[in-house]
Amino acid sequence: MGRFYEKIVRPTLFGLDAEHAHELAVDSLALLGRLPPLCRAMEAWVNRGSAARPVRCLGLDFPNRVGLAAGFDKNARAWPAAAALGFGHVEIGTVTLLRQPGNDRPRLFRFPAQEAVINRMGFNNDGAETVSLRLAKQPGPGQRRIPLGVNLGKSKVASLDQAVNDYLGSFARLADHADYLVLNVSSPNTPDLRKLQDEDRLRELLGAVSRANRARAETPGKVPKPIVLKIAPDLTFRQIDTVLGVIDEFGINGIIATNTTLERPEAFAAVGQAGGLSGGPLRRKSTEIINFLSRATEGKLPIIAVGGIMDPSAAAEKLDAGATLVQLYTGLIYRGPFFAAEVARALRHRER
Ligand SMILES: Cc1cc2nc3c(=O)[nH]c(=O)nc-3n(C[C@H](O)[C@H](O)[C@H](O)COP(=O)(O)O)c2cc1C
Image (cartoon, rainbow, N blue to C red; front, top):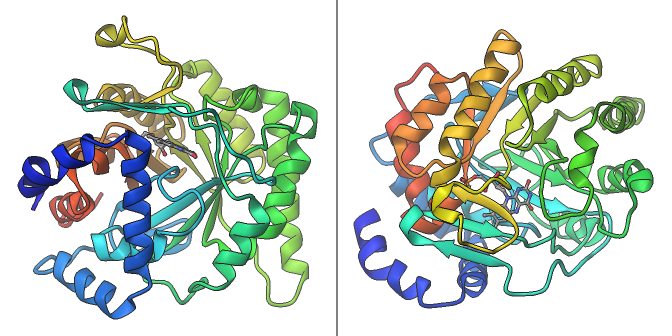
């Protein structure tokens, strides 16, 4: 299946502008998601002969270890079809409180020789209210084939001082629909967003969101949701240590490592495109960070690993480094729609 994609489908898709190809993929999945019997049949087919061990993480049951990373389905249109491709969870978003168009196009670039992508999308999304109304019409928590994460970011027009209220507004609209929530403080394409990883700002953000989360328990029928933080690969180990201290202080449930990098390996020295780099060149950096996180937390904090999973061995490497779950995005572009199923099958016998 992967061969057919790489020989026949990929050349056609790569003939299109990268964002058009992406929109085509999202539209196709949105259509597929409207046909639940077909999704069920495909899900049975992609999982044929593979009894993947269910994985418990963040208090949730995952049918396998491989998830669709944030950024593919920003507006919750495609996720109902993700299980049909073999994914064991999906993370929608990043969603911001306000609807926003993102940066000017073109803003998504492929680098096939390195199996990489640079993006500077800038959180183009429909906004928390619209996404929440869409989720309300789709299967909710407890009715889903696979867990759904909702990834939250800061609206571009919100200043750093307004950031906490911006996240709280999104949290209030979206928490009911999420199996877990992600605070994204690591995308490189929203000015100042990464400053929220600084100790004082992070403390303010995690303190406010965890208070709002605990307060859910006071409303009948509502429960606190697992909350995880998504970090950048460009932090130093010392900065990561500080982040871990704040995570511990507020009882944050897990960490996603990593987002895209601003670093440019040698092969990209002459590439002038601004934005975050993902895919092959991110693999090693992301694994090093997972290793560090796992050691620093003595394996006690759930780690969701993402960055440069372009073959099953890269996913196994992330589990060896201490991750419980993995996610991928760029691999889907280069390996095709059933790549997650291939990775999940390769990992199915692993205890971790
Ligand atoms: C086009 C594109 C858009 C992305 N948008 C988001 C986003 O909105 N929020 C987020 O947390 N990460 C976003 N990411 C980062 C991915 O979720 C992931 O962390 C990163 O790409 C590394 O994984 P990969 O090498 O498997 O792609 C985006 C990545 C790409 C390629």
